[in-house]
Image (cartoon, rainbow, N blue to C red; front, side, top):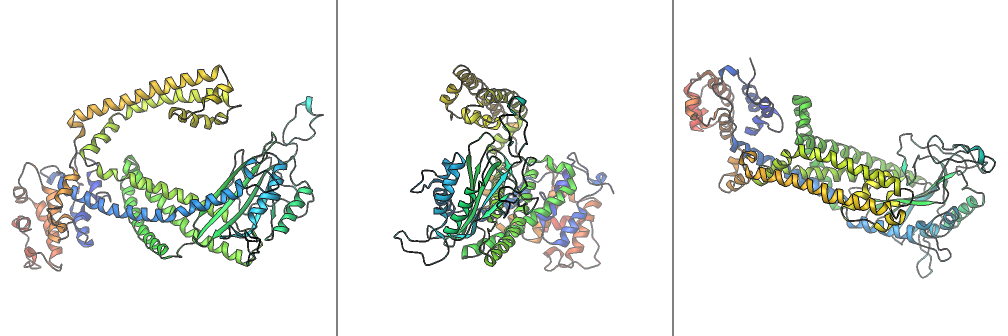
Length: 633
């Protein structure tokens, strides 16, 4: 038979899709659901009038969906707030102050002030060792434990590791006029220029290249370049004296030379009081121009789960969260199967897709993280003189936190889907919808001028001003200028003539002209929408429905009784604003066909609705029965 037809081609799909599961709206009984799904679509020639949208019923279902979604959002929020706490900040702050700011009594160099290879060795022999190894109390008495307890609370896991990456000689071309002057030429770091050959004493891992554990391992992004995870590696000792000897041995044998491009210092600490790990990576880069520059990454994460009562509560929330995601996954797969590429034409569908996708990735990583941490700790217990690579796990745990943060943000944005059934929100949404084309045209003009100024600033100030030394920095610097955060003195100092001209014209064009044009587009469209009621027409106001909840029985709102569910289904199929319900149900094989199936099911159901309790298995379904059914319900 021909499927149900309507002026709205997506009507049938909306009724059957997870976002508008029509049969599920009316019943949770799988048998009755199957029955209604098969009886929902009829030959178009038997339909006397078009389908009429039941506003109140849809509003009720929207409210139900909102309540369920708020439970999901609450669960997700509890999980995310359980991942981060203020102790993480204090832990990170303590470690950064100790290893980045501390100066020894003999040297005046800390990590942030390293500007040469000599400064690096001063830091490594002084502040680094003093900060890593704590063997006595503040009054000089030795600690009872043989382990190093930083600040007496944080245990140093395994041993620290120092790793160097190098480039080969003759990796750049020297102009013939200077070939007699420059015998050696070491280019900037790249995978093609990286040196894998042994150098120096050529014995031991610190003089011989060590390949990465995995070719898929993520490269480290420094200030100057991206570095792979292999290199020339030295594991320090658990004792300060032995570590000092190893560092002195490297220094005396010229471990750093013209081919050195970066040195990594990796170590991890654990605080049992707050059950937190802190993985630190200190990076000193030696650019081809000479000198040195520093950067660092400090990740404070919670890798051990299910220790306290709160952890077990969060574990229960994780199980509930997984159930929600599996349910949403099934709904989205069905909807994608039905809609194909049209699925992504809906903004809310795209949000649902992102929420489910990011949540699935988070679940998979959480399982992997739990297994991997156990494996790393087991290896650490077997050999405490090895470096435990917790930085890799801490890095991905941080990315996991970022992914969950984005998921929570998208989940909160989705609330607008429900509160958009409100006149005020409809005005705002309609305003953005109607001015989208104007804003798109304005954006083209804006970014042409904006990127033109970015290129101008990069060429004029790139060699002298830090905030303009890369093109990407120029873009962010110009956004800061728009917001009023700028350093005009640096620009003027770099170029006394072009600096003021650049700044003045940029502020005038962007701030005084283009931004005001943008606001004018928004204001004009909003005034048009607010003055024209037809542009902001809404099917129903969900706030009115919420007010009605106070006077309605809750079981009626959620269609808890079987008879009310059937009534809602039939009314939503046949209700018309022009015809009375009884007139539309009094004739036609269509109605009889529908109720034949429903009655056939209800004859065997327990308990039976009052109307059908006296029906016999072989009783004939007459034309009057459907009307009696509706009136009795």
